[in-house]
Length: 383
Image 1 (cartoon, rainbow, N blue to C red):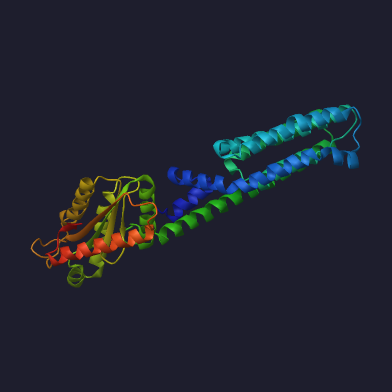
Image 2 (cartoon, helix red, strand yellow):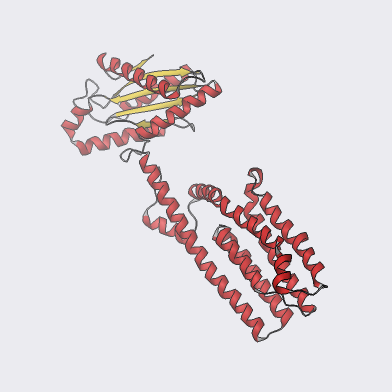
C-alpha cells in the first residue's frame, strides 16, 4: 500500500498528474465515470444541430441561398462528426473517445464558423454566440482532462477569433466578440483546472480511505476484511476454471511471552518485520498474505501445484525463524518462530457455496495449526 505524503500529493495535484501507476488508475476511473456526461453532451448536441432548421425558421429567417449550404454543413459535417464521437462511446472504441470528443468539437465549431463566414458574404449574420456555446458545453459536460482539452480549445478560440477578424474586419463588434470569447475561455479554463484538481483530490482521498479500510496499518498487509472477501472470490474463480486454492494459517509462537518480556513496542516491530517478510514472498498477482488477528496471519496461493504450494508454505513459515528475531522465552531456538496449518481445495464444484468452502478451509487450517502447537510448535501441519 502506497500513500503519498501531503507535500508530494500537493505537487501532484498542482501538476494535475500523479506518479505513473497512480495516474493510470486515476485515468481508468475518470474515463469510466465521465462516460454518462459525455453521452449526454453528444446526444444533446446532435439534437440541437438537428433542430437548427426549426429555430432558424422561427427566429433568424436566413436567406434562401444560404439555407442549402447551411444544411449541408449541419447534416453533412457537424452531425456525422458528433455521431462518430457517439460511436466511440462503445466499449471496443472507448479509448479513442477523448480524441473523438475533441474532433467533434472542432467539427461543430468549424461548421458554425463556416456558416458565419458564408452568411456574411450574403449579408446574413449567423450569431457568434453559437461557437462560444459549443466550447462551454464541452467544458461543462465533456469531462475531458484539463491538460488534454486545454491546448485544443485554445487552438479553437484562436482560430475562431482570427476568422472573426478576417471576415468582419477589425471593428468594435468583432473585437467585442473576440474579447467575449477569450474571457469565456479564460473563465472556463480556470474552472476546468479547479474542477480537475478537486476531482483528483477527492479520488485520491477515497482511494486512500478504501485502502486503509482493507489493510492492516501496522504491517501494511491486507486485513481480515480483505482476506474474507478475496478468498471467496478466488474460490469462485477456481470453481469456474477448475483451479485450486491453497491456504496456510500462521501463528507466531509464544508471542504473548515476547510482548511480556520485550514490551508492546518491540512486539509491534516484530510483527512489522514478519509482515514485510511475508509480503516479499508473494510474487504472483493473485497470491497474498494477510494479518487476520493479533499475531495470526494467512497466506493464499492460487493454482499452484499441491507439492509446490506446500513447499511455498513451509518456506514462508520457516523464513520467520530465519529473520533471527531474538526471543529468549521462545524455546530452544531462542528466536521468534511460527506454526502453520495448511489446506488446499482443488476444483471446487461450481454449485458449491464459496462462503461455506472458505469457512471450512479456514476452520480446518486453524485446527491443523493448533495440532502443530500441541506437537511442539515451529512446524507446519498439512491436511
